[in-house]
Length: 285
Image (cartoon, rainbow, N blue to C red; front, side, top):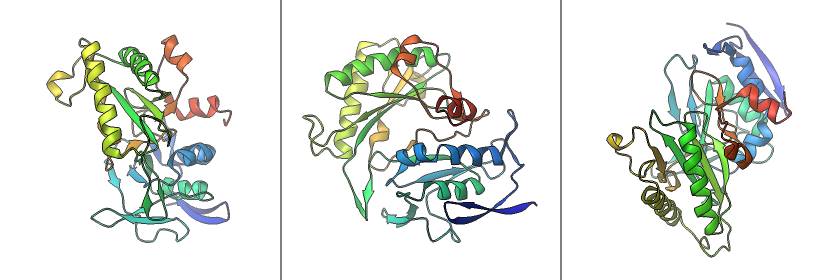
């Protein structure tokens, strides 16, 4: 087992098995995952900052077993901030300003690929109201990104009508996600709770299903999903999380939950993006 120490923003992190292949189909190694996370730390850090951070770990790569982790493990560096939350008193890591690069490097050492967060932030120990709405468009084969595109454009128009501009993100898995910031003083969003955000998202999903019945389903029932796009509104629930933009995914290829532009969605030539693609797009390669 090869091991060495790296210095990241004043913190010493012991790393091992950097030549381990995390994505066998692409040959992407643990070292390359670490390099990606360090390169996008400011972008990914902005997305997860002040949010309870749930991780999904693949210690031996995506061809092997994975597991979700909420508690920060024993032996974690003291400089990673934590918040204890929930009825089970989970000790979550919460990345604050100044910690993302070193913390992401430490997580990469553990085999973390995916970073999941709720739609609300926490200051001190106090959760704030949700600051964004998320709609997850999940296609049931044979539907794919082309069908997600059509639903996304309809969802954008509906949310625009509510005064909620949206931002598209390729999920890195099969579909597309839409994020809509929730302004503190908006007529729809003033004082909104997670339950209120869920209701707005549920109403949107129902309206899309009514308007595009051949294409959209708003219920999780598996028998209804083949050939349609599930408009998953449930991730606005206060206890739910969503993959963070710029997070890698534990897919066969090293895909990323990658923000794209509406011009790209309108163009229609969408495909899931890899770590290499994202680094090139952001000028970080």
